Image (cartoon, rainbow over all chains, first blue to last red; front, side, top):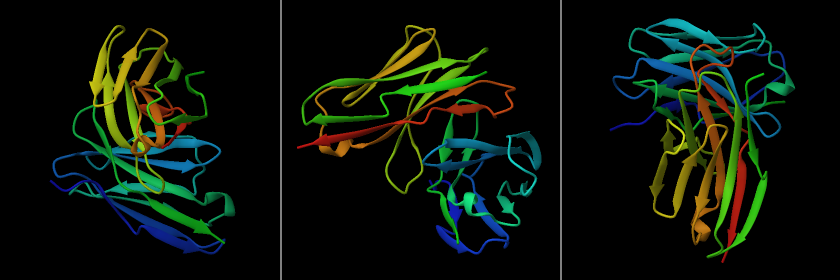
Length: 111
Length: 112
């Protein structure tokens, strides 16, 4: 059974650019959540999608956005990148409310 | 404010030296509590879900317990391969921080 797949694994971008990250959930999982992980702040919730609708959103600026497709795959986009956006971005999928499986993450470095 | 606090931030043990990690939370309407293990550069790996006070779950050298305000992850006779960051997350509906609020983790190092 394939797990949660995130691509790319590593990314280096320049300040001011934009970036798109992808997440393919476990087959049959309709809920996808995104988190930002930094050494100082830990895991912070970005947003959650369920059946192509954003169900919840964390306290991040509007530069962070996401979407979910009909096959449950999800993308998140960060525009006008800042140095502080450097982090590990994690995606988690779930079938029921009590089981969240994480991908390996995308390591984004902004220079 | 809903929050999750883990202690200690870092823990160094000798192989075979048992200890406990703590996760305290202030959340209204708790639906469950998760423990995850995270290795460097990887995503969190699920360990346990606990739902009610008094519940206990075990897996190999790990045992998780839950009270009304905190959870403990007990590590018995740890081995070097248990070295990782252990994350606690509380699960509830309707919060502005999403369904899961994570603590900042306890980094465990086990020396041979």
